[in-house]
Length: 595
Image (cartoon, rainbow, N blue to C red; front, side):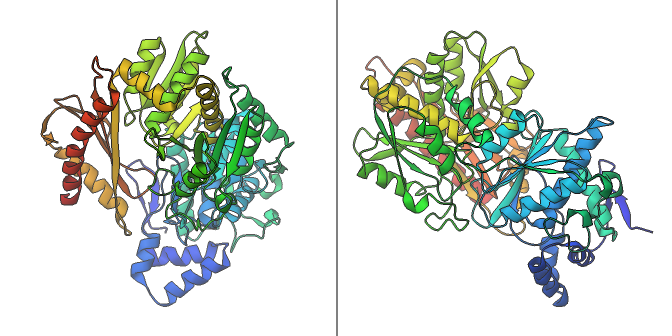
C-alpha cells in the first residue's frame, strides 16, 4: 500500500525518504547529465546533498518559481518544468470542464537551460492534449505576456529568472487575463503539482522513463486524467523577435498608441540590455520614435547566461549600470536606460546637476512617469493608478491632487493589476512598484521595461523641448507634495536553509517589532500580509519590513517626508529627510544582525 498522509489542506503527500525520492527522480528525469550527477550522489550515499535537493520542492513566490539550476524538486530543471506544465494543464482543463481549452503561450529567455526547459513545457502541454504557441528563440517576458491577451490564450508560461543571479532560472505563469497567477489559481496548480509528486514518489510514470527526445512527444506517458496520447496538442510557431513578425508588430502598434507629448527635441539615449534579451525589441520600439538616437553598450547587448560584466544582472544593484553610464557620459547622452535580463524592468539615469550621472530610484521614475501621463491623459475621466505598500506615498498624493483613482496593493504585479481588473469602468494609466517595474496603459497587466522606456524617452524629449530636466520636475513635485525620500536595503541570506531562516526572521519581527527606530518611537503598525510589517514613527516616517518572494533576502523600505519651505529649497528638505533615514537604517542593520 502506498505510504501516504494528508497535508493540512487535505491533499495527499508521500512519506518516501529523500533517498527513495532521489531514486524515483532518477528513473523519470529526462536529462542525461542530471541523471548522471544524481546517480553519483546516490552511489556515494551523500545524504546531506540529497536531503537538500529532495526534502521539499519549489513553490510559487511573488513572481513564479525561481531557484538555482540543478537536479531535484528544489531546483530548476527539465523534469520540474514538465511537472509545472502538467499541473498547469490539469487546472486549465478542470476549470474548462466540457469546454475546449485555448492554447498556451510558451516563451523563454537566454539563461542556462531556458530553451530546454521551454521545450519540456511545450511537450508536456501537448502530451496533455493542449495546443502550444511558442515564440522562437529568446524573447522578452513583456512580449510573452502581451501575446497571452493579444491572442486570447488560456495561459502563458515563460522560462526566466528575470534579474536573479546567473545560477538561477525559473518559470512565470500567466492566466487568460494576461496577469500573473494569483489565488486561487496558484494554489490549484500547486495542489496539482503535489498530486503529481505523489504519483512520482509512488513509482508512477508521469512523463515517461527519461522523457522523450524533442519531437517525439507521442512517446510521452501522462497522468491518466490529463488526457490520452491519442489527443496530442499541436504547436504553433509565433516567430522570433524581429521586425515584420505579426506578434512583434502588434506589440509595437500598441506601444505606439500610448500617450505621446508634442515634444520632438532630438535626444540621445544610452542603453544596456545587461546581457539579456531586451535589445532587439527595444531597438524596434525606439526606432519608430522621431528624434531619438540610440547608442548601446556593445559588450552587454547580446544575451549571455554568464552575465560576465556584472556581478548581479539587476540594474538596482550598485555598479550594474557602470558601463552604460560611462557610455552616456562619452556620447553626451540626455538619458541612460537599462533593462534587466528579461526586459520587464527599467532603470533610468540622467545627468546630475553637479556633474556626472545619477541613477533615479524606482519611486522617482514612477512619479515622473505619473506626472507625464497625468498631463497627457487629462481629458480622460476616472483614471486609475496603483502602487504597492512598500512604494513611495508620493503617487497617492499626486493622484488625490489630480482627481485620479489611487489603489495600494501587496508587492508584485499579480496584485498590482487587480484594481484595473476589478474596476473595468476606470482607465488604468500607470501601475508601478519601487523595484523598477512599470505597466503603462489600460491593457497592461504586468511590468514592461520596453513600453516604460518608450514613455520615459518621450518625457525626455518633452523636457528637452522646454529646456528643463528631470530634476526640475522632481523639485516641482517636492514643492507641491513635500520631499519624499526613500532608503531601501536588504540582508541576503545564503545556504540551503535560507528560506526557513527568512521565514523565521519575519515571524520574529512580527511577534516582537521594534518600539523605536532612529530615535523616534513607533506610534502605529499594521500587517498588509502575514509576513509584511509596516511601522509608522512619531515623525511620520514609514518603515516596511518583509522577506523577498524571489530571492534569499530580507528587505526594508523606509520613507521620510519633509515639507519644502517658503524658500523653495527642495535640496535642503531632502537633506533633512536623508539624515532621518540614515539613523533608522543604522538601527535596522543592527536589528537584522541580532535576529
